[in-house]
Amino acid sequence: MISENDARAKILEAVRPLPARKMSILEALDCFAAEDYFARLPLPMFDNSAMDGYAVRAGDCKPGKRLRVIGEQPAGVDRQLRVSNGQAIRIFTGAPIPAGANGIVMQEDVTRAGDEIVVNVEVEFDEFVRKRGCDLGEGQKILGKGDRIVATRLALLASQGLAEVLVGGEVRAAIISTGDELAEAGEKLEAGKIYDSNSILLQSLLKRSGAAVASTQHCGDDAKSLQKAFQAAARNEIAIVSGGVSVGEHDLVQSTLRELGAKIDIWRVAIKPGKPFLFGQLGSCFVFGLPGNPVSAFVTFLQFVRPAILKIMGASDLELPKIPAKLTVDLANDGDRAHYLRGKLEDGNFAPIGRQESHALFGLSQSNALLRVETGESIKAGATVHVQIWE
Ligand code: AMP
Ligand code: MG
Image 1 (cartoon, rainbow, N blue to C red):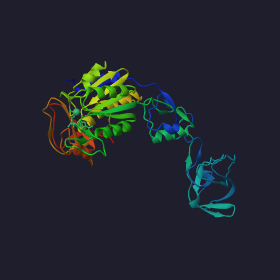
Image 2: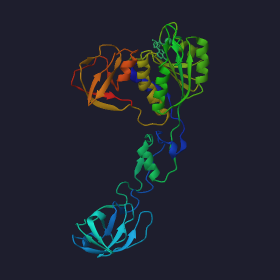
Image 3: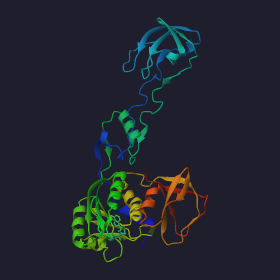
Image 4: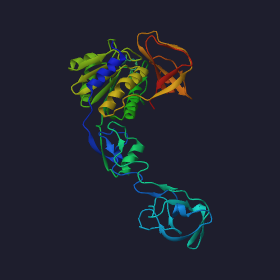
């Protein structure tokens, strides 16, 4: 049995980022930038008006002042107008500031009379003027290599006129669920059978991690069908097998992988739930063997599979987000494995929820955070803990 940290380090050492690819900006959402990006254009790109109103000379305006409206400056063209003392130019939001102007008076703050306005307020220097580059300067870094391209960053790239971005590769993953007891949705359940929930769990977690699900196969507990399933799965970057990694006579994943010539790098990790976790390489495919118990599959996916996927896709941050929370109960771990407790994070408090056994899928479904309690650690109610979230 190796420690959880050693297991993660070994996995992350084995996997390598895929080659980068050019991608249309429309499809780059949730990919990872494969290079640093710098602003080619400042934001705003030119001094422009933050309001519909009148461009004026600030020093020239005080309440009661009459100004002649000498032109109109809409957004989308630059009419190259110039304003002097005693004058105003009708202007609209986003329109370039005319030469000579250094303030905008809102249309609500003037009284219009023919081709004149009466200003009803003081106008401060640069009031309602959005200055070129005040948000983003030319050459400033806008995205780092390995950053996830979320909607707002995608919009920022679009503001630079980019049609394509260089992003990390796409991970294709095969799922194999094993077990003679498993039935598919819609099938009639014979006595002793259960519905396969791990396939769905793993598909969902893979999608959330940004990987593509290449195939989902189901195998009984027999070496022949397992072999075939692995051979098909090995065409992908990763294969995730659920069940069959433990020590029973029906747990055939490890022996089958060895027969196929796979290299087994990890088997059994000091993590609860998830001890029988397996990691190996079959040809160029990384194989993750997750225990069949749903909570074990969930926890080992998040701790071992997710960071590997992120690394292969070129992400720089491989960690789950961690949130500080106040623990509501006393906790202690006197076992020999780090314990991941499922709990509910609500209003800054964390409380364990549901049964804490590895088969307890309902309890897991009620939780939204994981608390890792190290071996030998005890934590008192009221203490601040840092819990992992995954949604
Ligand atoms: P195993 O890891 O194969 O020994 O399975 C451990 C437990 O997980 C057993 O109770 C299995 O019935 C259950 N299990 C295995 N695979 C799945 C699955 N795909 N969906 C739901 N439960 C499963
Ligand atoms: Mg099994």
